[in-house]
Length: 399
Image (cartoon, helix red, strand yellow):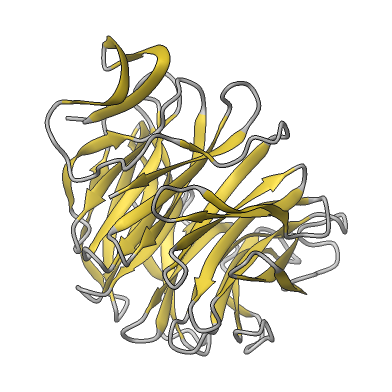
């Protein structure tokens, strides 16, 4: 059963079969462990469409950086982590105006953020990155990939909290056909610490990679969607702190239906990875998960996080050491439009409590991202929303 939370100020919306008008969060169907801290935060309102946000927490400053695409540029802003108020106004990160799909991670070793994105200014897609200090100043732009005539897309990254190195993963178009999964390790100053490593070169398409860092064993699990079996499945591979693969490719889920857009996070309490994805095994889409141990062995069967008669898609996942638990958020058409929902998971990745509605407006709320605040057992969730007409970045703080 879902738990519904909706805030309406001077508006009425049909929520779970009834109209609600209130200046407070309205709860139905019992209690759950996710609690919104405030009303939805309008992070951007420039009049330009802003999309595809991502966020990361700086525990030393008590702040979040939010990055997003606006008019083909990669932009950033910094919010304080208590109420979400803006402490650094929106600023430009990229030089090119042909950029999209940014991702950000905090590097505690250098007290900086690392941002990566796709850049189409050369006619094909290349991966670029930036080091951004805690005050929002761009320290360095660096090019990750630039194969002439071939696309490199969908970058993701994770930081080695011991050394300050960071691993960037992406989809790489092959010379023959299809796409492969590649990665490269960088030092904290953005100098390359390894060559480009191809993690999967199967002749079918591999794409939409994600990566999580294992601080106990100083390794990374890279996951991706893979078409080698005729439909899309979820595969993965563990690489060490030098970007050297230490396992073969791992079939995390090869159910005879499509599995899309995996996301991964690491539980320090259980010393295991949790992988979640969008799954079509019953016709419509639901959110499923599987555990992978630090050796790369599958830990139990896959299982549903949330799968009902409606559609759940595009999951995002984070682990919080303050509570030794995960949170997963997704897009859901339960109310007839796309909303952002979420549920808390224990340190093994098992759901507890009901799903909670996190977005306020009965419009399209898309592409959620989530960052944990490991000092205070809180999270920031961001997405793009077309209220009142153009696309802006919205956020919700939860605990």
